[in-house]
Length: 74
Image (cartoon, rainbow, N blue to C red):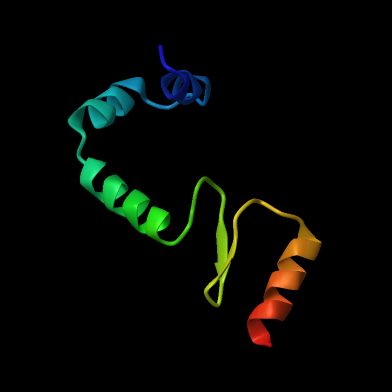
């Protein structure tokens, strides 16, 4: 059992639906498109935040967000 499947099970998700969704690859194209867009914008992981085009490339803290907001409005 991989890590995500274990998390899904631990959360009590319907594992029949989970497995069907994961094996269908239904959303694979959209995920790849989003990943490519993120890479083009300089995103190297999650979470990342953008404020008026400025990137905060990690979860940060309140001071980081305040500084980013101040930078974006000046």
